[in-house]
Image 1 (cartoon, rainbow, N blue to C red):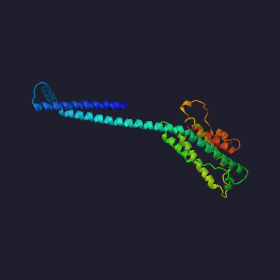
Image 2: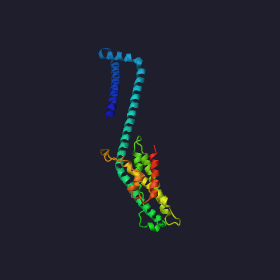
Image 3: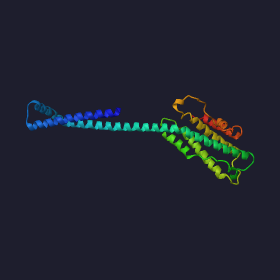
Image 4: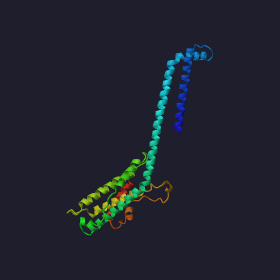
Length: 269
């Protein structure tokens, strides 16, 4: 609204100047046609003669004023467009933030399913059994919902430039890497080799726990403003995530790998 009134004021000023010039020219032409040399016509004639030497300069001045006002109008339009774009980005970011708890919940559900399947594989290997396809017929192997990756990507794109989105970038990267490893695990089932070792399975569980910790920590960032400061807690680590996932004591290799992950995360700037 403020920009609109400024523009209206500038246009009104230009209209008044143009009207005054038009009336002056019309009066001068009319007086010349009538041949009147007294009264108002005399004043108009004298005023016109006084301006005559400055005609070129006045024409240039009016042209500069018109150009300046046109440029100012363009800048106003650009400023208005920038404000509208900033508002659109802010609304999109708020909308995406509002749905992020659902996305992060889906991440945690995926990790829980992944850890459950890996824990089953760990039990088979610990018992000396091969990881064959028939032993996983009754196990729901995790499938990453494409909407999860799309939601994280949208959150990264919708965030303002000033906001640090590295946590979302890291979560999306780790999540897709974990999903790719599960695709490799499926393709290896039924082969004649021994499959993954206990340490390798433990490392996969630890990496899944690290993803769970990342998603859990991001919940605080997308919490509504009305709930800020309510129930604040210390950041979840990969080792604590193992406790929450119920495999802290049963997979010692996962705990060792989780401690390494946590040490690396603590050393990041």
